[in-house]
Image (cartoon, rainbow, N blue to C red):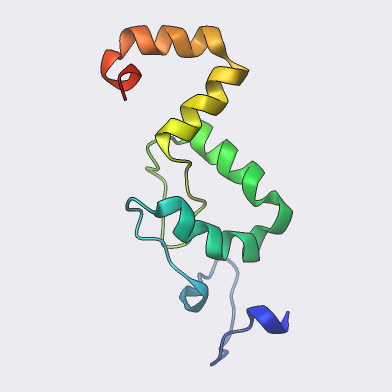
Length: 101
């Protein structure tokens, strides 16, 4: 754990966000920023959690400084197209603007 301890350690609490190890401003580089602390917190589960978060909350409505980030939309659609082509085709027909991105 030494590699992940803050320089000025303080008390830790359940559901407490340690902003010393990184924060996410949810901008263009949201995934890259979130990956820094996400891998520290969640280890091997990080990639799986990102896929789930992206599927459940693609607009990233439920977020905080250290929430699981979502995948960029192009990556998200590529993954879902491979897994659920009929569903994605129907979505694209209804939302032509998304299909053109």
